[in-house]
Length: 112
Length: 114
Image 1 (cartoon, rainbow over the protein chains, first blue to last red):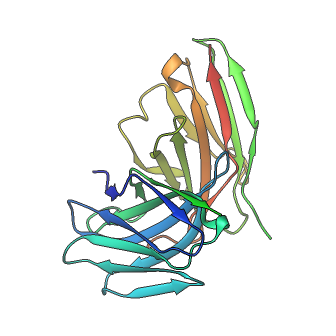
Image 2: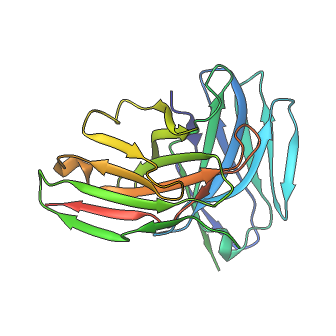
């Protein structure tokens, strides 16, 4: 089943913060986050495994709460280059271990 | 930097025609995938391939679709008889490991069925 992302879209001014959420109805083993710019392929941002860890990558970080089957992506002091569609990809605990199911996507636009 | 390459970048075909989309994954990767994305929508899983066989496929991947790795480097997706609703961007992806590894996506092949 497909994870649900919220919000569907967000518009920010440069320097503002945003949070994108990803929820699944099933137990998860891992959550991946990807960003896709218009007309391009998705690009990997980070992966979070079971353990409730938080990860950071520049001013972009994420958390994973496997009990709630949720992950959140935090974008701090947004830059124009952050614009794009963000997808979470989830892997279930009981999957064969080689399939990511992508969420509905969150469109982020950062304005000057 | 190694990358996943896909050809063609854009193909226009008539409904009912066969189409083959080609991908060259990163050379030491072991897991291969096809995803598709209808314009403006989410990225949908089609099929995963490991050890020369399909490991998982979605309900989208019906009998019209097939994949093969004919020569150890190319990874192809064949659509036997295209339908209008097959129009989409098809992304190939590869990974060295699953569970902990990232998927590397190709630039995509845009298929337009008329």
